[in-house]
Length: 128
Image 1 (cartoon, helix red, strand yellow):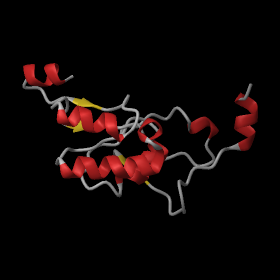
Image 2 (cartoon, helix red, strand yellow):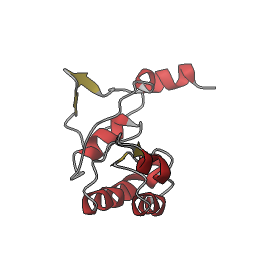
Image 3 (cartoon, rainbow, N blue to C red):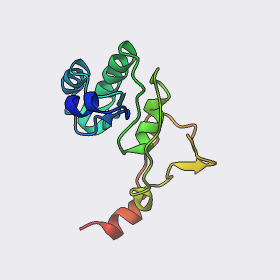
Image 4 (cartoon, rainbow, N blue to C red):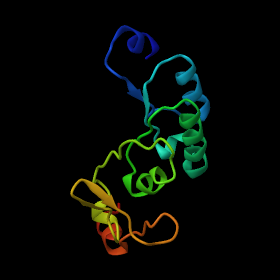
């Protein structure tokens, strides 16, 4: 990625496959990315996300998410260099209250924690 980034004028965004903030730091140190987009699951959950957000802030890199928008939308709210929310509605059929998108903006419910609750009947219906 560093070679690609140095060979083009097009800004590069990467991070969806970083397993932890050490991999993120290596990519930043190598000049591999202009924007970062960690995956909350792979970066280390909420704690890893907060560490990644601090690293992005130190390097003044805009930070977006890779998937998991129901949780990532909340995490971007506490990310100093928050950029874009990558949204996919894949989980909506099994969520009690899917993330609402209105006029291109995520509307977060006034709930504590992740705000994620499963629709038990749908989980049972789709489960194996």
